[in-house]
Amino acid sequence: MEEQSEILSIDEIAANLRCSRAHVYNAINGKLSGTSQLPAICMGRRKIVRRAAFEAWKITMTPWASR
Image (cartoon, rainbow, N blue to C red; front, side, top):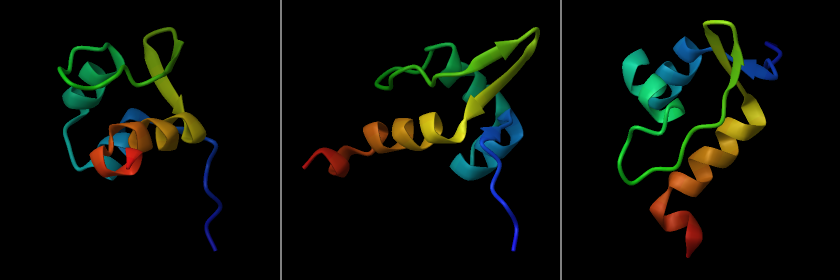
């Protein structure tokens, strides 16, 4: 059984969302209209995202979740 990491890379997020890495960077930088900024931790040039923050962000971006 594979243990899930607390930290996600840009590649892992892109695979989960089925989008490009550039699209993930745009979400982190708040450049996508109609969405909130994806919270990320900057480590120099590298950006990582906590799994809990990513899952919470996905829920807030789901239109039917607020019903």
